[in-house]
Image 1 (cartoon, helix red, strand yellow):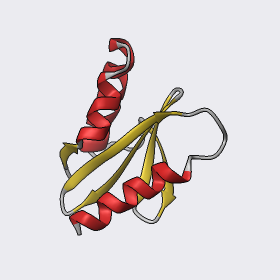
Image 2: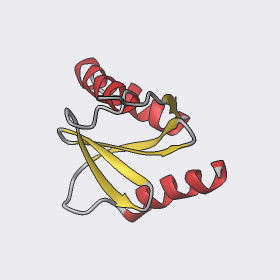
Image 3: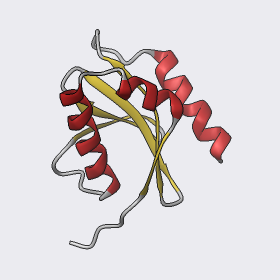
Length: 101
């Protein structure tokens, strides 16, 4: 199957979140982001939240991202504590999406 490869842009807020995690969790998240970069969505769990905003699901962690003009922009991450994704997390990702527009 012909897949496109994206550039991976991990923004500072997402980088800080990932860096704060135990190294095993960091490695798992970065491996899944590698799959996103390779457009290999069959081996990872991704949910569409709102418009172009998606969340990568890695156990209890959620990493928000969107894809625009050949790049994956990883905007933020958080520990999932309830059924619903916090609105402020989605709003932040949307704000970044609009700024890059």
